[in-house]
Length: 94
Image 1 (cartoon, rainbow, N blue to C red):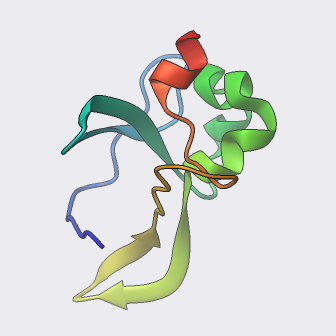
Image 2 (cartoon, rainbow, N blue to C red; image 1 turned 30 degrees about the vertical axis):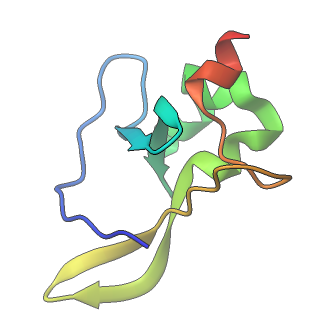
């Protein structure tokens, strides 16, 4: 489990708002993915989400209906292996 606080990022030209996530772990030198946000209109045209096709929902953080101290709460599950594995950039390059 993890938790972090941030502001909702702005969109850059041609991209939906996203946060790049880099994970370091024992036995893994480095893996990278991106987290997008549910309900963003630019998600439909974002090149990364389009590239992963049917896997795109795995990159979209879901608003869980809660607020904490006035802050919106999103859930973003990162699955390291298996059928529900999160798309990682090293997977997209191969």
